[in-house]
Image (tube, rainbow, N blue to C red; front, side, top):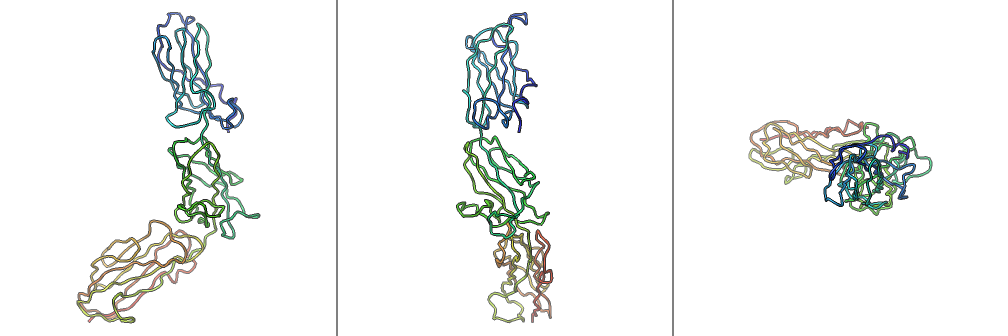
Length: 367
């Protein structure tokens, strides 16, 4: 946070001369001021407020109609020097929508050898929250559960704003433009061994969880930004993972059939599922013997044909226990004996507790 004293040191100069300017510098005046984010809407600069850099200041000579524009510097200050004496209108604009806590424009009189001050207060939206370790995985923040510092949180609005949780697990994104919606996208902490705990589903934000992050997408609901502060807490869960193959089946063939005839056409399906306690990245490879020709991919998992294999992966994490299928439509082209159909589940985001179930084979024949 930046206090009032941080605003008063630097000066930004610029702008064209407005109106006829006498030759002597003593015969001209200037306009200067500050544009700041007035977070408490007090109308005055105070502790916790912040500068509003790159805010545009337009100055119009009310007698001649001439105008110019300058921009506030990183400390929110601006200056328009060497102005002919007269009456001017000074107005603020940012390119984004903010509430004004002071009038959006003021009329001033510039006198020789003097500087007139025109300050402007703006107020935007605010999104804050706490990241914590949801030890019991219920999506509710409870006594004794630890907070998580050093978590990066992106607040996606008409501009991208990034914040990092402090030692108390707290983050805040301030001064957000009021032009549209905000989506909170916290860092996925797989490298620290955490997935997202159960929370709201992105499209159903009314669910009664303290964690406001969809565990599958990693996004919050879309919030409409106003000057009322939003609280979006982020729950994480120490992940356990067991990605597993389940079965290989031959669709359209009698159960237990393992010998096929040249010319037969059928679909081979393999099913895999994520075990563990958090949604997990899920992909698989289904490989068929050289005597089979893959005609097309099949199954609900997005996949592509790559030689004798179909390789796939879901673009989003999958819920634990969800059985998913990858498949290949095949034709038997020549005879073979005791060859394997192999189903392999891909590594996920977390260490697998039981790698022995990552591969499944089914021996088949063709005559």
